[in-house]
Amino acid sequence: MPYSSAWFDGNRQQDLQAAQHAKLRRALRMAYVQPGSRVLEIGCGLGGLVELGATEFGAHMTGITLSPSQLAYATERLHGRAIDADLRLQDYRDTNDGPYDAICSVEMIEAVGRKYWPAYFQTVARLLKPGGRACIQSIVIDDALFERYALGTDFIQQYIFPGGFLPSTQTFIAQARAAGLQVIDQFAFGLGYAETLKRWRESFAQVKDQLPTLGFDRRFERTWLFYLCYCEAAFLEHNTDVVQFTLHKPA
Image (cartoon, rainbow, N blue to C red; front, top):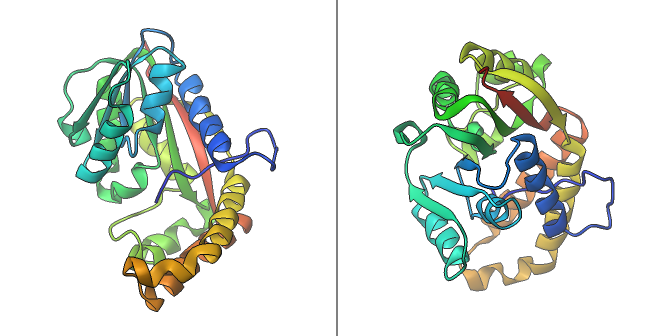
């Protein structure tokens, strides 16, 4: 799924790109990124946070991903620009060039898998310098629904993100603490994601007639529309939320 956006200041007139940048800036600020900071992004996606961290914050950015297509897009995005950034096709567990001053990770943990959460948080702790901060953004499921959710698979796990698994807020905090990290801030903005999904759904409706020319059939159209509606409803009903967790590694 592409990075979603959030309206931090309550300005619903803001376009998606401006809202997206506001979200990424907050992650970088909460990780206390400064000029000259060495920053690792675990799951760099299309390169938006790497670009922002290098250009606006003056940091040396390292982005890692397991997707060759995402790496190619992000590399092309930064090509020919005087940006202090290093993009790699690399598993986070194989990253050994720490410590970093700060770590950011935007909605990658949902793809890790429940059994690998300890390895994920231990890696964050290992790569972060003493006294450093990490801002980890995660979609979370309501704590009250977690045990039932863990017993089976839902529509998204079956058809959209096989192998994906959402933490709850409580399980996220417990895993972070078990790795020796302190959770010093939580910022939830699920209603902003509901607004994002509403806008995606409306945009999709405007271009869906073009799908056959792109090789997508009616089944794809209905599945994707259901996915957008399913997620929008979950955020509106607070069954799911999205949270930026700020973690601190004790000095």
